[in-house]
Image (tube, rainbow, N blue to C red):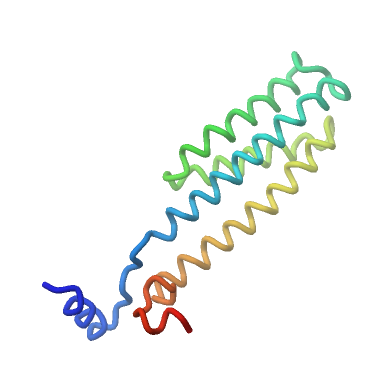
Length: 145
């Protein structure tokens, strides 16, 4: 069956054409980049823990270091739906440092806001994809509008 015939059948049935490229795959790349940046920022908090906290050998130091490593590991696991919940839980643990390390809490609050915005964007892309309004789902003449 030719490509134009299959497009005609999809237009006649009223279902939107699937996108040529998977937009969620590109979005996972944005999430992975955000995770790497967050892991770097959390790793850069280790000298602060060493100077102003209980030291690197303490529970604080091991927890902050473990969170940085876990964030890096999560960047490879983004294809699983549960990984988002793990990322959010790691950020909540950073916020839980409010009593002992308030400067680490600032990192957690900042990245919770970033992840909230990314989840909103993800929902918007999924909604547009379901409605068939993505540029990659439009016929070639309508994509330029």
